[in-house]
Image 1 (cartoon, rainbow, N blue to C red):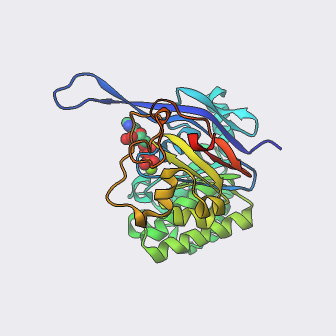
Image 2 (cartoon, helix red, strand yellow; image 1 turned 90 degrees about the vertical axis):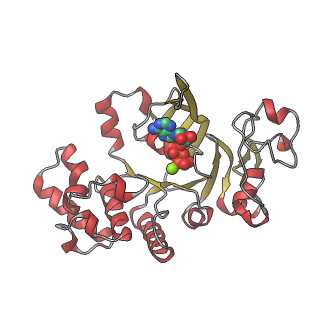
Image 3 (cartoon, rainbow, N blue to C red; image 1 turned 135 degrees about the vertical axis):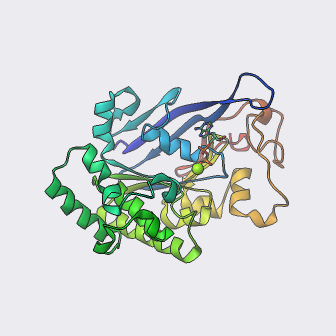
Length: 306
Ligand SMILES: Nc1ncnc2c1ncn2[C@@H]1O[C@H](COP(=O)(O)OP(=O)(O)O)[C@@H](O)[C@H]1O
Ligand SMILES: [Mg+2]
């Protein structure tokens, strides 16, 4: 069976002004040939340090950034080849929870208006909207009387529940979650992770969950992809990647205790871990291998395993 979502060889670049006295632009490659897939009912975690391209990957799927190359295939449809209206219809099935709920929602809006926004855009009649609002608030364990309140009056955990409710209100099959717990304290984060686990079971959803924290991802994900400098350096079943991380960058993420100081990634070389990798060879600086399969569905981008 074909995957639900298949991202193939995706490239995204941003142009930013050089700043200072320098003229012109600098090009930042946020994604350099990313390929990933999600099966129906599967939960894929995407982990990596800040600036790795995780948010850009999700934003590309929902059409907020335009890739230079590659394809994003949802149920056999290449989203990048569809017209805007066709794409919007397909994306009803894809819920998106952006990073930082407080920044992605207008603080002056009520919970009702925020959650119902996607339905208004789709022209859903009022009665049905109210029904869907009630049922989605119940799903995310928010009390009914929260509807009229302004988002800024709510705690961080409740704001995140509202963001999840908004993503669920169109009854999606796939949920994209960008750092859903990073702005929360430990106990609230655990509640949100439990909610996500329950929702997936009740609704049979598929997830792509992005986080810089491998522990929270491993709680929800069946498979984990590790991203560094816009590349996937390793992907595999969560337990394999945690128990036996193969790429040096994954090892640092999984076992940061042994690492002194900050591990700087090297954007000038083919492998982001080149500067500090104990196993590096000359060719790691100039040429990167494709992801090679080293175990069942476990792939790593490293010349040691080719
Ligand atoms: N809108 C943008 N304009 C310019 N550069 C951007 C923009 N969005 C992301 N970037 C750059 O792309 C790279 C990847 O960013 P991002 O996807 O946010 O990474 P992550 O979510 O893993 O922290 C970073 O170098 C970031 O500075
Ligand atoms: Mg991010």
